[in-house]
View 1 (cartoon, rainbow, N blue to C red):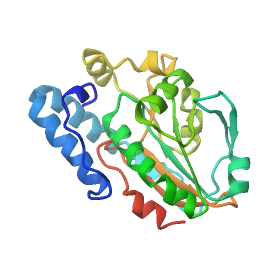
View 2 (view 1 turned 45 degrees about the vertical axis):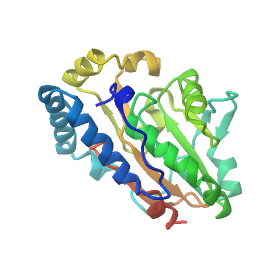
View 3 (view 1 turned 60 degrees about the vertical axis):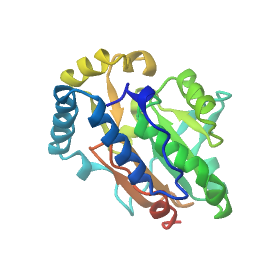
Length: 228
C-alpha cells in the first residue's frame, strides 16, 4: 500500500479524529486507487505474517525492556536508554519507514500530542531501521520534534520480538511501487519491525506493549498515554 501517498487527501486532525479512523481512511482510499490484484498481495502477506504467531512473541507488559544506544537523526548523537529513563518513563514507537503512510500518520499524531507527553513527565522516541539520513528526511518533512533513532539491521527491534523478513512476493511488490527498502535501510536484509509501541517505566519495566502484524492497525495514543 505504500507508494500511493501522492494521491491521498489530508487526514483529519487527531484532535477531532481517532488515529485508527485516520488509518482506516488511508486504507479505504488505497482500495479505491489500487488494482485488486495488488491489494491481494498486501492482504495475503499480512495474513501470512499473522499466521507466524509473531504477535505472541513481542515483549509483554511486565517484562524488562532491553537497553539501547542508538544514533539520533538530526545530529548523530548516541541516545542511551539509561539517560532517557533517568529523566522519566519513555514511549518507544517502532515504525517501518518514511515510505509507509500509516507510520507517518501515526508519528504526526504523536507530534501533536508531544506537549502532553512532556507535561506528564515522559519522553517519546521513534525508532526505525532506516539510515540516519533517511530518518533526518523524516524529521524535516514531517516537522517532528522528538528524537528519531536509527536501528541498523533492526537489531533493537529484534530484542523486542517484533522483527520479520519481508517475503519475496512483497519485495517484488515494493520494488514495483518504487519503495526501495534496501536503499532506505542501507542493507539487503529486507528486515522490518512490526509497527509497535511500548511504554517503559523509569525502572526499565514495560508498562504498555502493542504490535500488530497488520501494519494498518495501531494503538490509539490516548490509550498509550493512559499507561503512564
